[in-house]
Figure 1: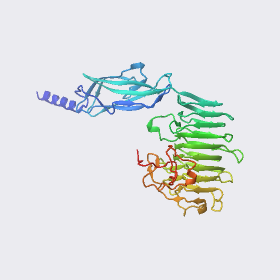
Figure 2: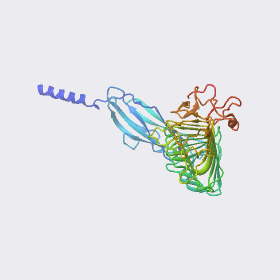
Figure 3: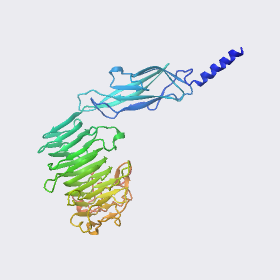
Figure 4: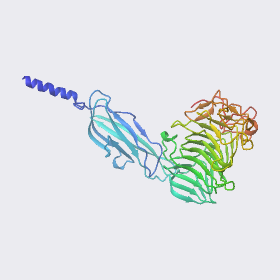
Length: 461
């Protein structure tokens, strides 16, 4: 009798120590009841998303079945705790434990210019309890281009363009991009322009150049594609109303000498989140107005080997955040040649998290006639520079606090107390009566320095 009692006690003890003993049916809860995929390009797989099924009770939970409602015909695929079959039965979940569900989706072409919703559910059965995780994605047909060399072409906004490898605009040919067009680049993809690129976006229908990782978490991730390179034979390039992001060198102008220089005119363009440079110009002609450059791993704007650049009502705002940034936001140098670029900066901001956000490879004596700043904000320590010349920097604010609404969210509008307000040159501003958002600049009171004109009551989103 005593032996029997001891054996029963041992059995009871073992059961008590087993976290899966005596399971019961009950309710399954989830880390999220809906898994939503951003737009998924048809014929291309999505990123893998994760959701957890939780047992929040103090007893083991018996789950009779987990399955994908759409079965083998579903656009979705699920992996349940390492099981890729999309089906699990007789699963016991310990108290406080969880099951990881990994989900991806691949959508067949839908023969439509508009996105199409695709839905399904991951089902859980535990006795009389039936619960589900809703799955939703938007499928978008695309125009896929792999290592294409183009003649004259016009791209519209009806379907996104997705580029693999390199897309080239051939010499003496023009690619025209109409308002509302989205151009996505796969990993390490690029665009090379030997002819001419004309981008005609506007505030209401901007043109987008970005990574094909369209999820919000990847929006500000740099270096996902190579960028746009303009060869020395490229001429008459114009980009208006566009956003360019996630590249290595977003805009790369590669001139050869004083007689073979590409040119680029930028208007109302945002160039952000690039791992090396937002604008790199070697022996090139550059004009930029109402443009924003920032969040770049090295020099946001790099100008070298002659050529010229005219920046008007631009905002250069540089805080990197990934690693130490060893170079300033704007770097102007002779490079491999002997000629310093001619640079004219008016009504513009150059700011960041370094003491000096501009460096010029020259001496004070060489500066006049080459470098001219007027009515701008420049973050620099004039006592540490070897090139400072007061006459070349007319009416320039020297400070380290421009007063943006929110650096962390890349919101470079002037805040309530910003020193940028009402300090820009009126004569220069008359040619640009509206800012990058098409908001009016005042005709009589001083306009604001930079690409943004502060509007009454504006604050962080």
